[in-house]
Image (cartoon, rainbow, N blue to C red):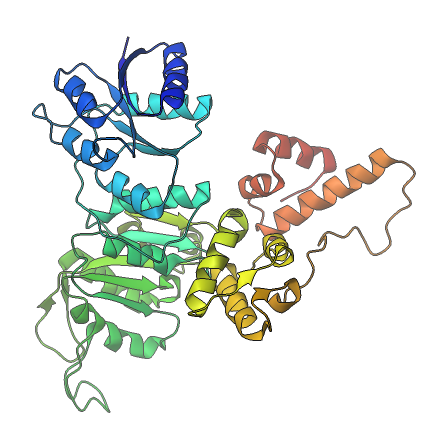
Length: 443
C-alpha cells in the first residue's frame, strides 16, 4: 500500500482529502505545517505528497524546494494545492519540479487522476530553477492553467519550443514568459514576425550582412540572431517562411552557427529558439509547404494557446487587466457590459478584446463602461436552418433539425476536426460519431 503525505493546515479540507485518498486504497500520513511534513519525509517511504501553498510556518514553495534537496536524491512527486491560483504560483511550482498543481476545491476524480499519474512517474521528477515574476500573463481558466504548467516545465530547458494557436491568442506572451522564467532572463529577448518582412529581406534581417553583400549594402549589419545572442529568439509566424530560408534555419539549429550574407566565415551564436504559428505545420508538411526535418527540429516541445472562446473564465479578468493598463484612473465595467463581453465569440481573440477595451475607455462618457460603449453586436444565435426550411410538424422534428444544423456548423468552423467539433458542442466524440452516421453527415 503506497503511503501518501498530506501537508495542509486547513483541517476541514485536510480531512476531506485524507478520506478521499484513503478510500482509493492508500495509506495516509498527515502534517499540519511544513516542518512537520519535512520531518516525516526524512524518514522515507512516502510515495507522493499533497502540499498546500500556504502553511503557517513556511510557504509551500519553500517546502517543495526542500523536498527536491532531500539527501536521498529526488523526493517523491509533489501535487501542489492552492485556493488562490495565480500565474506566478503555478509557474513557480512547475519550475521547481511539482508534478501537478490543483486548485481547491478538488474533485475525487481530480485527486484520483493526479495521484495515479504521480505514482506512475515515481522517481522521474527533476529539480528546476528559480523563476521570476511575469506581470502580463492573465489566466484563470483551466485551459490556460494547463498552458502555464507547460511554460513552467519548459522554461528551465534550452529545448526549442513550437507555440501554436490562433492569431491574437497570446502566443508572444507565452514566449516572453518562457524567456522571463528561464536562466536567460537577464539576456535579450528578440521577436520577429516572419510574415511581416518580405521574404527577400528576411534572410538579411535574421543573419545580417557585410558591406557590399548586395546593392545597397553600404555597411555591415548585425542580424537578429546576433542581437539575441545569449538570450531567446522568437520567430513568429514561422509557417510563412520560404522553403529556401527554412533550409538555412535548419542548418543554424544543427550547427549553432550563422553566415551573414556576403561573409566568408560562420559566426557561432548561443540562442534559444522559440517558434510560433497560427498554421497547422503538420498539414503544411503533408502538402509540401514546410520542411519535415525542420518541423521536427522546432517541435521538440509544443505549447498550444487556446482561443479566447475556449477560455470563458478569462474574458472578464483580461478585460479588467486591459482597463487598468488603459488609464491611470481606470473605468469599471457595468453588468450589461460584462454580459456582452462574455457572450461575444471573440474571433480576434485576446488582441480583439484589448482593442475593444481601449476603444471603450476612450468613448465611454462616464466612469462606467456600458454595453453600447463596447461596439459589439448583440450576441445572437448564429445558426440558421435553410433559406426555405421544410414545414415542421412537431417538436422532435424541430429539435432534430437544429441538432443537425449545429453539428454541421461545428464541423465547418473546425475544418472537419471531429474532436474539436465535439468539444465545442459539449458532447463525447463517440456520441458525435453516432450522430454523424445518423444524419449522414460527412466531415
